[in-house]
Amino acid sequence: MTPPGDILVLGLGLSGYAAATYLAEEACRGADLRVTVLDEAPEEALRPRAQKLRRMGADVVCGASSVTRRHDLVIASPGIPPTSPLMVSARALGSQVISEIELAYRESSSPFVAVTGTNGKTTVTALVGHILSECGISAQTVGNIGNPAIAAVSEVGRETVLVAEVSSFQLSLTVDFHPRVAVLLNITPDHVDWHGSLEAYTADKARVFSNLTPDDRAVIDVDDEGSAPFAGEVEARGVPVVRVSRARLHPNGASVVDGFLTLDTPEGPEPLVAVEDLAIRGDHNVSNALAAAAAARSMGAALPGIRAALRSFKPIEHRLEPVEWVRDVEYFNDSKATNPDSVMKALTAFDERPLIVLLGGHNKGNDFAALAEDVAARCRAAVLFGEARPELEAAFAGLPMEAASAETMLQALRVASEIAVPGDVVLLSPGCASFDEFTSYEHRGRAFKDAVLRLARGEAV
Image (cartoon, rainbow, N blue to C red; front, side, top):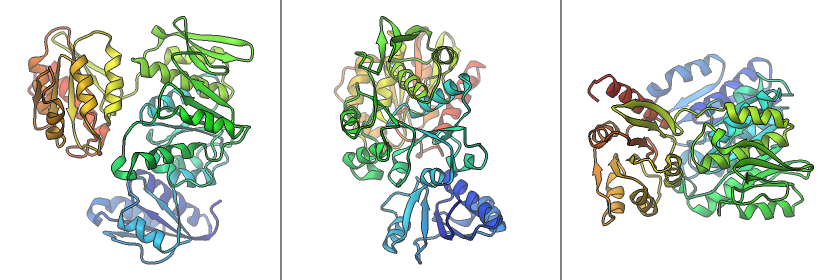
């Protein structure tokens, strides 16, 4: 139960609204809480959510530019950067500022599995939840995967495992958050505009391990140079570490042995499934499956259930998602690829099939030079679009591949469809955020899929 007090929620996005709703419901049930919500957006953009919260007794202020009084506790939405006037003014008044995932942990009696990393979080979170459920262990996926953790707190029993996709934004504002299993997949440059530096971004990711004890488990991909150093650091604190590596099987680790995903157990290496049995594509998804299997095993999942779940797990929407064949060209939606590293991983998923990749959107402070070199080495063509197009064009200048350009994502799809020949793959893997044209990567991915289906029907895009 939330301690009595004056609580402020910053932001009425998905997680902020969920947190405010939870707290307002607690107040309606008799908790000694005063709930205030501030958002910079105008009333018109937030009216349905604001009105509902006001009916529940919360004080909602839209168009706010600063926090004007001290509160006992502040819950900040991940969309509010640390440099924003709301965040700066809240801290200046001495309020404790936490994230929605921290609030959910404090309010919940459920065990947590926390999954973080620059790329692959959603796939691994979904796969851990799938494995646990297939093994008869009650589990619910929460966090960035779509359902805010705080929304699940009052819905699930204490035996339900909350498998949480946790972003660096959320982790930066954790204090007591203590998962039973913490998974770190990789760390590559991303969200530097929000965190201020790669070092700060890395430090926030590593907070997932802050409260682990010898009774917990850390699952770390040691093939990734960004995450690998944390294996030794966490182990030195007495926390058991499961090392994930496609290259070799570490003691108590997870790897590929003779073509089979394998866990090292006290009884010896246990093969799970053949790599070709996975429905999810690419080397990175082999690593993701290993990490998920290790995390689920750490929560008590039995080997037969893990094997069955790995075989039955299907690709997630917007993550190398097959869309449709159009005139013998296959189209894939990878809209979740919002940084260069995720695109580079996606390029490994198609063996030697000729690729046309669509790149563009809003740059989050990333350099595109290495991405352009990888694309030029692997792809038959690229189509550059959106706000980041000039930066992408500069990165491709001088490389031995002509990159076409378009104003918008749909125009880029039209260009790709015109240059594609039978046998090609057209891949939307933008390497950028979606906010120049769309409200989210989901919005962008669905617009892409709708347009591909129109192409398949012979309609104009």
